[in-house]
Amino acid sequence: MSSTAPPAPAPKAAAKAPKHAKRPLPPGAEPDDHIFVDQLVKRYGETQVLRGITMHLKRRQTAVVIGGSGAGKTTLLRLLIALEKPTSGHIWVDGEDLAPLGEVELNRARQKFGMVFQYAALLDSLDIFDNVAFPLREHKKHLGKRGIRDKVLEMLKLLGLEGKEHRMPSELSGGQRKRVGLARALMLEPEILIYDEPTSGLDPITSRMVDDLIEETRDRFKVTSVVISHDMTSTFRIAHQAFLLVQGQVIASGKPDELARGDNETARQFIAASGVAPDQISRVDREAADGSAKTSYKAM
Ligand SMILES: Nc1ncnc2c1ncn2[C@@H]1O[C@H](COP(=O)(O)OP(=O)(O)OP(=O)(O)O)[C@@H](O)[C@H]1O
Ligand SMILES: [Mg+2]
Image (tube, rainbow, N blue to C red):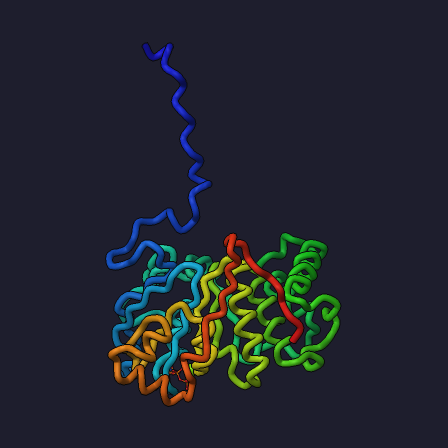
């Protein structure tokens, strides 16, 4: 019998499964979670800075963490990118718990994250090319001089910075510096981009361009974005989900207009105090009708 049976179909190559599908869902996680923050606590001595935070950060969406000064936003960010360990609780990235990882495994896990620092944090003594090449020279030496050069020039072109490679950071506008910071963060092809206060200190027009840049980048590079922000206008434009942090706790989460109009009095007051009129701001929608990415980095 077995000789006449058709050959069994070759098993589908495991390599074809998306990377994130490898692990089972942690308890409490949802299937489209890219990052699942589970009962996260951070204490420094007697001071409890994060007091049991739970967040579902969805794959390829933009999550914005808002909250007043001292609420714990930067602390949360430092834990997310595994610069610090939680006192208790867990951060699951693609179903992998970061908490028990040792230094070598953490370095691997950190490569999933790209960080776009406040004010771009470029190295002032290096030109644009060398700033953007920096992570490749650190982590991808095997590409060689030529390979690194090609990747840097390609990224500068993608971000509308063609021909700027020999300029110094001081010779660029604020918006251009942001794009250089973004180019540098993208060099190691992260799955998750974290932006620390991306619009702070920028005028409204440049802020709007940075919002567009964040959403265009999410579509073009298929990343999940996590944004720490004080800027409610920006939050309304880019957030699929906003999380309001107050004294180390997420006291409200949801779409920004749900927070603005929902039952949570503190959230309503926080948004009202920012002076933003939710009716006048709508999300930047970059998804083309056919689902393809729209990538038009504008001059700024
Ligand atoms: N290493 C530390 N040791 C002790 N306390 C700390 C430490 N880091 C932060 N804190 C405290 O934790 C609280 C939250 O700080 P954090 O920097 O996370 O706030 P934030 O929301 O980023 O504020 P801001 O909007 O002003 O940047 C503050 O009260 C701060 O003093
Ligand atoms: Mg901070």
